Image 1 (cartoon, one colour):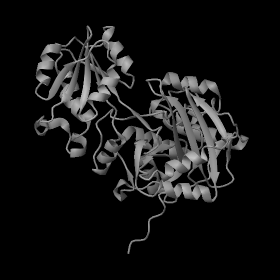
Image 2 (cartoon, rainbow, N blue to C red):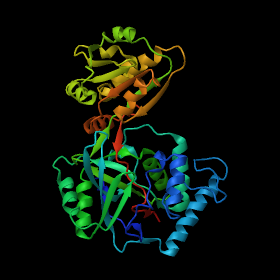
Image 3 (tube, rainbow, N blue to C red):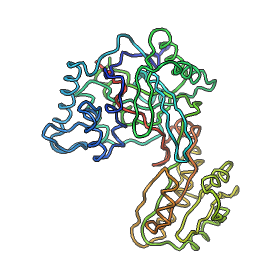
Image 4 (cartoon, rainbow, N blue to C red):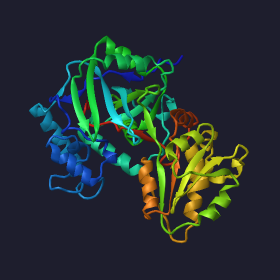
Length: 426
């Protein structure tokens, strides 16, 4: 008989900044921080977490991965962390806990939402166990960089972001209940208000049980999760990773679409539209109409997008029910991927626009529909393709099929801040 696997989610003894106001000390995840951003966060406080997650060699070497003085950078992060601990800048909590985090934020439409999740220690185990499921392809260089930092510091300096299916909303309700008390700490980061609560004892064990009742899905942090698994192979006792877990039923959970902006020479819209009629019902968007609302309406039951061309020529494309998608070779292998709006639109719409130009085109991505339209309206871009957001259930279906989403399919907001809690793996 197989032994019962260890609990997927567990409380842990975290370390936190001694300060109660954390705005000057936290930062977004390392992989969304530009070099200008790094300079900005670093200047806020000499103890800002960015000094650890994107360390620079003491001589002031580059902030990116690899390059000269790489080992120095990681060693420097370890020495800084040790000094902060020594000085009491960061202190361990007295008991094993889970940490509830509420983020109050606005989506591009201006609507305000609150996302509530919890930081806990999740098993770092190979994907073959099926208990933690990915949806994204990873690359070797970021994993090597994060592994070097983990080896040097022996600390999870950032969390990964996981989704719990939570069909009965028990986790979601328990988190909301706990988040009604006075918070332990507060922060503001790039327009997002953050509140933190520390929960220990039996309530922490119960929250961990609720979060780990079924498999968990990686929303963000695939590289860091795989790094933790690699580290656990060499250090069997370090078999957990700092994770932020949100219920799939949380009303504040948001995935924004990633709209495509195509640069380069102008395209012949009429030729493209004629070709698209093979797969799509083609319509025009009235100038007075709200394009985002119209897109949501069109995409309720079927795959839809809006393509904006210069001179206010905007067309709606709604996939025909009888569209012969089996003949589209680059759509993906599993039915879960072939059913994705983003996979269909990338293949049938975006790639066809890219292929219609003579010069090598370039592509940019934005979650903001107004930025996409403006790029076309002011003549900087040849076209923009607006998509509806990917649904959480689609992410789960792709992960359950053992497949990966196409690039730039999901944009979870807000990003999980780094620096609220860190976790020693020793």
